[in-house]
Length: 341
Ligand code: F6P
Image (cartoon, rainbow, N blue to C red; front, side, top):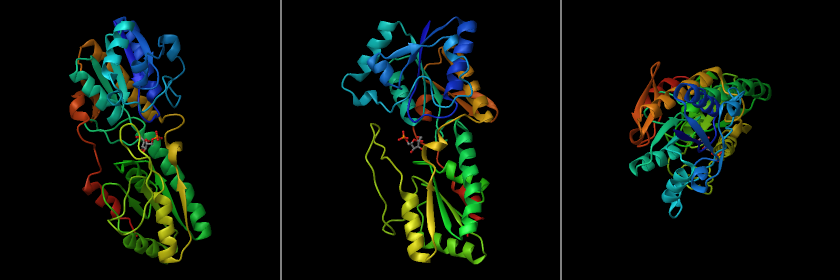
């Protein structure tokens, strides 16, 4: 059997580990052949492929990014997109697809499955906001990078008696902010799930200065102020309708300076959180996802996604996993709030 593999959406450390595991088990154990589709759904849409055999996956385990390339192409936004994909698969003799992606890429996989395409999903995102799985790979690496940055920012903030605002990724969910902020001893953590009150933030900042410490405010890029309390920047939208974010950290720094009279600076971690080599935990999780994804293909478990539940890898319906995002539980946020101010 010939199987197509694609990686879609924002890249994520560990993608190559999944690809490697799929091929390293699929070839010797099941005698499968693979086709690498380039740049997410653009590959099957436009018939853009690359060879994907054992030599092609040698040495890629510790490499960040994805050898297949990625994009945010949405075939449901292209006229006749689904038929085009069907044609490509038929022309190449590809009988099944493994789609490695987040809510958007796997949302497309779920819809294609409903239309009869044989597809299995693997959850990926540094944001950790996919339902159905305890964790996604990439998250651990991103949290590690953000925590190291916060540790470093503490010492320079102290030297200059400044407030430092660290903007981390997290469009709809504040998992990276919560984990790195807690691990890094942040003074305040702001997440998209809980609109913040800038007056309250300034009170926490002032209270930290009063005890002779410099405050570190960790803010997820998708965090928003309570209605009408301060202005924010907005950006353009991608093919899945998501606004390009970035700028909340700078807006908060400006407000803190105006309201407290203290100097405030912003560090936007941005794509540094997504680039480079995956942590050992992410390599481990990604490798296990790859091994179980190829087993799911062998079992014809179409429309399923491999997922981590406790220490086990299980299968959940793609439709269920992509129905709604996994956001931060208010009880977890309350634990972190114990350290604010
Ligand atoms: O979904 C992962 C993610 O890294 C988000 O945290 C972020 O909002 C988005 O991708 C940025 O996407 P891009 O770099 O592709 O514009």
